[in-house]
Length: 404
Image 1 (cartoon, helix red, strand yellow):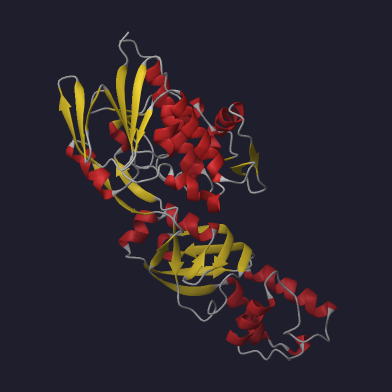
Image 2 (image 1 turned 60 degrees about the vertical axis):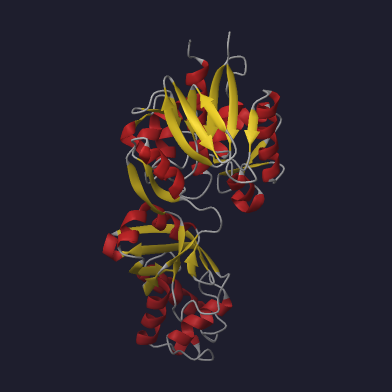
C-alpha cells in the first residue's frame, strides 16, 4: 500500500502531538516549522517547567476555563481530556505531577522532558521535521495540495494546519477561504501608574478581587504588583474573558481593587477585634490583615495616618479611608503588557467553519486545523496546551481510521 502524504504546517504542541499519534504504516509525515527551533512555546511554558495541562477531569468543568471555544470543546474533551494527557505521557515513561493549584507539570520540572518525548515519538516513526521552512503558498492541485516553502515544494494528500496565531498564518488560511476573527491579545497585565503600587513590585495578595465596573465583570484570585502595574491570575482571568471588550476600550478603563478579598464591613470587624485585643499598639506596627508591612505602611501614608498613632486613637473617618484604600481602591488602567512570553490571542479561524468531531475544515477537503490558529483561547494554567493535545489527538484518530 502506498503511504499517503501528510504535511503538518507548524512545529508546536498541536503539530507534534498530532504526528506522535499518527499511524506510520499508513502515512508519510513531514512537519514544517518556520523557526530554527520546534516546540518553542512548550520550552518556555511555566517558567521552563512546561505547564502541560490542568487537573480538571470533568469536561463540563474544564470548558469553563475557555472564554472562546467552550461550547465546541465540550465534545472534544469528552474524547480526550487531561486524564488522557497524563496517561499518554506516563505510558511513555514521562511521569507528570499535579501541583497544589491543580496545574500539571512533568516530575522532572523541565520542559525539555516533554520536548524530548514528542521529538522521539515523531523520529521513531521516521517522520521528517524541517525547520526554517517558511510556507509561502498553499495551492489546491487536483486531489492534493502543493505547498511552496522558502526552501522546497511539497505535495500533500492531507494538510494539518497548526501554525499558531501569527498574522501571516491567519492571512494564508483566509486566502484559502476561511473567515478570520481579528485577533486581539488575551492574557496581559494591566499597566497602572498609581501611588498605591509605586515601588512595591513583587508584592503579592493571595485573595484579591478586581472588578471592571464598566463591563460589569469581576474576578478573584492571587494578584501581583509588577513593574508595570498589576498581574497574577485575578488580572489575567479578566484580560482573557474581556479580551475583545478591553481591546475596544483601547485598554483605557477603571478598575476597583480589593486587596483583601473581603468586603468593607468584614474588614472593619477584623480591625475592631484587633483594636480591642491590642489597644496599646501603634497602627504602624499592627499586623491586622494579610498584607506586607511595606504595603500596610503605604496604605497608612495614602490615608494620611501617622504610623506612630495609637490604634485606639484612630478616628472613624481615618478608619474609613484605610478600609477604602484596601477594599475599594479605584485605579485607572492605561495600556497593557503581554504576559511573559506565553503570548495568547483571542481570535483566529471562525469556529463555525470547523467540524469538531474530527477538526476537519468544512470548506477545504482533507484539511485539518488545531491549536491557536483557531478562535479558541483559555486562561493561564495549562488549558491552552490541553486544547492543543485534545484537538491534535482527534485529528490523528480520524486519519488513522480512514480507508483509502
